[in-house]
Image 1: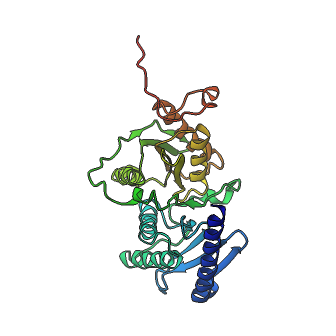
Image 2: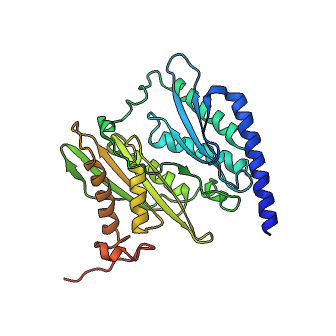
Image 3: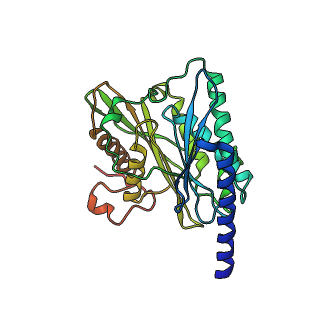
Length: 319
């Protein structure tokens, strides 16, 4: 068995080497090797238009069992890419992976992102310059503590079905809205929904964005954790929506509390006054409060040490 695994890994490594060589030849200076030993690369992608030029940076980590059994780990850096647009692009990359499981996928991903940039430019006459789209001036006082921000597609040939739209009759999970926190004219409000599939995550986001107030928020930061019983592992992800490192911090909170099958979104309406690190405190406090209110975790630190594996049923108090 060990010989078979080693043989597969050697085959994957050879496939990666050939793919990287091809991409380097195709994209030239746009292709960059960050750490060859760790298989970390990036590529700058643009829509090649003189007017309304858009760019994005795709950062990639190639795991040992890519492409035979695992997808690349990736992150798309583009300040103008937010909310539903980011989710739409991520879904299209996931669909491509599902269609080509076991094959080298990076070229298809790069060109899909390029097509997305072109469509974005053509569909809008005026596109905000990168860095000005719902980015507050607080980026200048960022202290992101080197939090990992790579988006991981926890897909393989067995759980690829999670991303296929075969549950057309699936209902939108119930969404709860928590109490807002206001500080120096900035307002933070949490939203929570139970989720057990990536499709439900998408449905919750779409439902939230139907609300004009939520859609107009400066940032809609979210994180979710879904426990896969058959794999005994988590499918999890997060989104900063322009508030750098906020999504990673929010996901880290969900991990510390050991909650599962839940999604938390925190909307922030920027009030024009810099909050510095306090903004992260408010985002996490909002999230913690609604998790406590909905019974996903206890209200004291001592009670959370054992972790809340699933949502606990509420017990009504008698007066």
